[in-house]
Length: 322
Image (tube, rainbow, N blue to C red; front, side):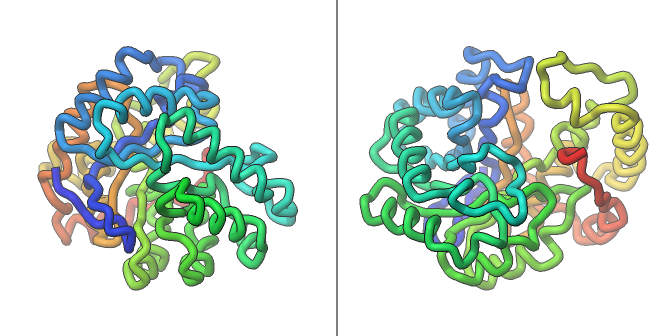
């Protein structure tokens, strides 16, 4: 496992981190606590030291599982997130910040996460949605200041709305966020249009989420794929979307050839080929997935000629919102 600086925080984070949404259980039909804990432990044994969770992942269940592992491995760096009070993803335009991030809500959510995680200080607290309408508002600024002064959080960041990396450009310039978390993968290459370069210039950490496009870039999504009715992927891959994904993946695999050991390996190394990216956080619920994903760090960036060709595989669409 290789390590990178998380922007100006000075924290050394593993190139492959742990996305802990799936272990929360809710919305993921195939999540089992015993297996999730084994996966977390195995990841740490392989050098992974960064775990990203959230207040709403399983109504705190993900945070509780992370707490069990963090207690045994206290040097592990843990990030979590404050949801909007209106529980809307993504943040909606023209909605007052008092409906989304009032000061007391941000303070109370952080206190709850501190208890769930079993810690006195959160390494990285993030706003779970963002709207450019919030940038000059005092609510989130005051909450950030109070939390940092109280020592309840070390650093502060934002999780960017799905497929909207440009929405935080002005926020990054304020110097008030230490990190941004953004969808970044072979299909959604939009963070590379300017955000990651700006973050590198201003020394803001970039956390790349959804490197596998919710499974599309693993090769597992094909015509006829089925999910349990309670699994949110039932909607994400509804209708003819599996066929759309499959057709694109076939072309993509031919492009990659033997430059990567697998499609998931290529997907992770694609993110890590951007020097602005501090860590990539695939969702992992099984030790076998942990083993495969952590190994990608050791293989380094993808070849430059392949990266150039992968630009043609950019796919602008939004399966979340439809």
